[in-house]
Image 1 (cartoon, rainbow, N blue to C red):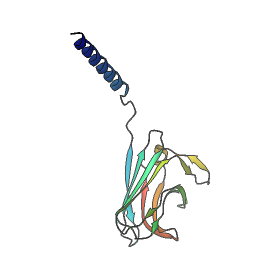
Image 2 (image 1 turned 30 degrees about the vertical axis):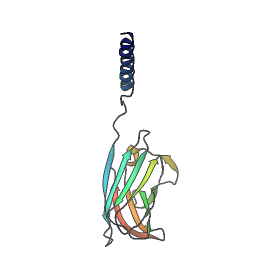
Image 3 (image 1 turned 60 degrees about the vertical axis):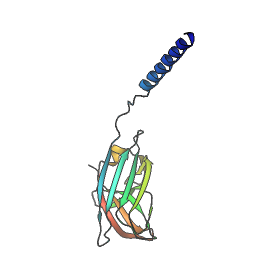
Image 4 (image 1 turned 180 degrees about the vertical axis):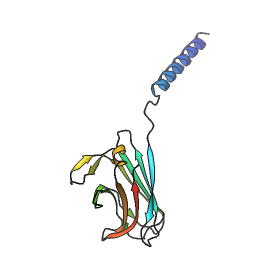
Amino acid sequence: MEQRTKRVVLIAIVTGILAITGSCNKNDDPPLRNEQFALNPVGNSGISGTVYIAENLDSSFNVTVRLNSSVKDSVHIMNIYNVNQNNSTNISVKLADIKGTGGEVIGETRSIKQAIEDTGNFSSVTYDKVLTGAQVVKVFLSRNMKDSVLCIGEIGR
């Protein structure tokens, strides 16, 4: 009987610890947001895609670019550009390059916290800030052909 009592007490202790641990792990973090935007083909490239912007807990963000097609053995460069009143564009955020396979490709740039302003200075940037203002994502054929835009899309609200 004494051994059975010890076992019941041990089970009660373990159950209590699990209940306390479970309540301490309650997720009080706000839900993270994400948005997606279309990339439209330029000229006769036939390449389109989607830009996904996802918020991180620290207010930084990730940018994932999915292209429906790519040019085999080319390294496609991608950037987010500021668009000012004169319709000129300056790089705001340099995104990770994607190696073309001839098929669908995906590239991701994680934990973005800084952007380049129109003045050329770096500033902190958050998920909310990147989605306000006039900005576009451009995907180019390669580093050597920076004037050859494959697809483009406006981002923001």
